[in-house]
Amino acid sequence: MFSIISRFLQLGFLVYVAVAVLYTTRLFLSIATPGILHSVKLFSDSSQGKNTGSEISRKFEIDSRLLQVFSGSAQTPLIWPTDNPYLDGRTQFPAVHEETLLSKAFTQSLHPTKIVPYYFRASSKIQSDDVTIATLVTSNRFKVLRQLVERYQGPISVAIHVPLPVEGISAMSDDHPSIRALKELHELYYSSPHFSDYVDVHLAVSPFSRSVRGSKVESGTGNDGQGEGGRQFNLWRNVARLFARTEFVMMLDVDFAVCTDWRSAVRKSMHKLELNDREWNPNAPLNVGPAWRNSMNETARLNVFKRLRAGTAALVVPVFEYLDQEDGSDQRIFPRDKETLLRLVLGSAPKIASFHASWAVGHNSTNYAQYYSIPPGQDDIYPVGQYQSAYEPYVIMSKNVPWCDERFTGYGANKAACLFEMYLSGVSFFVMSDHFLIHQSHKYEEQARREERKYNRKLYTDFKEEACLRYLHRFHVEGMLNSSKATNVKEECKKVKTVQKIASELFSIEL
Image (cartoon, rainbow, N blue to C red; front, side, top):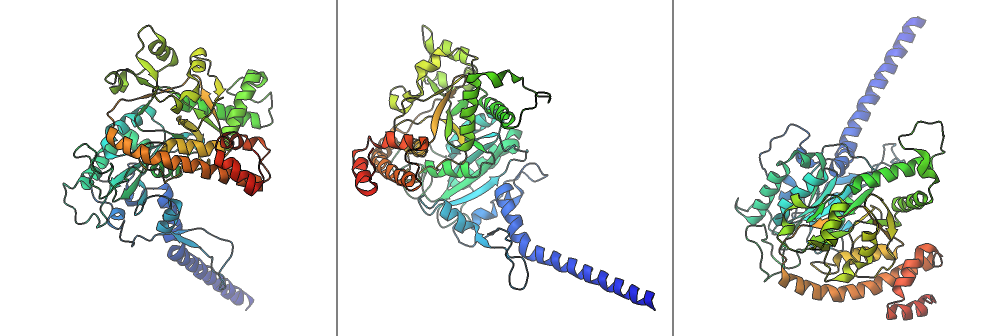
């Protein structure tokens, strides 16, 4: 009798377990999968299977996300698990719609603008301590993007603007400039295996044209928007940086050639820093010798990289250009080491000079004289001693420094504004003495630049005042105004007379 009861209880228990498993599985599939898996898919994978690591067709098709981009129907929930259950005991999954989250993230941009993250996604494994090039591209620069990808062969996060009328894409003919741009992007991505290995592509879709109205543009480049202000450079920079999958990013314009291996230099120093942070066991096998531990120069260097990791330092890679524009059109002849560069810069018949030497304030804080004085192979780092607000170097930085202000559209002050706010927040700049970039020559739209600079000059003046007051107030409230982190904001903002007066009256701060 007892054995019959025991078997009955065992059977009942097994039935209970089976029902519980089925219920839990059903609950997960009905609630968790659409949200959690899609949130992973959105930010770590490519919707529509557009990563070349799998067997897919390379035939061009319109992505369904673009069909719905201005319709408001593409409301995919992004879900975060929580420890707080519903009243009935089920797991709670708070959700925010993807479109809502992205509209808040880029609230300062011109609207309507829709972001399509990971339109294409790289398939290779990316290390978190790597350096991602965060860049931006319009369809007339696809060739240069391919050259950058071939040269760097490391992680790249690129924001690509696609002008798309608000009526949507479904009614467009195959020869519409926007369709052609998407086809060209598709062909570009499959033109080299390095794209599928390293490149994440994110679309910025808007009805704004690439160029301001009235300027001369190249035909057949997908420039068929319906209004002005298409060059939302700072928005595109933020998109590329937000979706980068590494701890560090290089904020780089696509038409600069990567000439030296600063990526390996950063990773090597970060590896040393990681070893330095551990309790050193002299008997443990190491790939690097212990001599660097006793070097004051190396100690100071590692402190810079510690600050880079903490988001209070950025590494400047000096930039150059060919004096003859024709010489600078072919990246294959660009120097690949500092020794060759110096011969072309300092020789009796120079062929290369510092970038935009006629606009000295843009890059002279790099102190090119000091850069030239350091022998090749030293792998040294020196601080930028004389920062000024027009300084706009190309830098390697933590992903977690302040974002670029998206009110800047078009040419003039857009990148300087990014660096200015970084500087006020407490970021200091250090120059890498063995490394450099070279600009690949191309024609500029001079009329467009003049108009856009005029607008941005006024905006930058107001922005500097606003940013100064914002950071002075922040450090004042946090009790950090007398800390080293606030040195930059006090030194730079005392140059703005209106800020001195307002800071004194509102915060009792004397600069």
